[in-house]
Length: 164
Image (tube, rainbow, N blue to C red):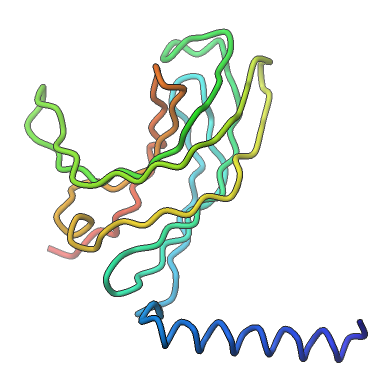
């Protein structure tokens, strides 16, 4: 396909996406917000981004996450990790020592094996949806990974702070 054909195809695809967004009521109210996920928790270091789109009735989160394994870390110390899922959770924190109240959870299965120090792998592209009502009531909205036994929360807040 020549350059003109590619430009025409891309324009057509954009029009289809715009029209289908209007018809389904899924058009964004504002531009997507990009959040950097550069952080770490115990034996996992996180790289990547989360793109949040306000769709009016819910938020859509596109997560692009890479992980690096650090088996020497003290928290969640293990010689290997078999990640089974990534989840987006909206919670309300209570007082110290009382478990958080989970308002909403969206889980996506993954299959990532890490067993070498400093080994880095990319998770598949993930898309989550969180109900607007739950996100509004939550004191925290975030992502986390698990092998089914241990949890690795990604210590980056996804909920936009509201002015007081």
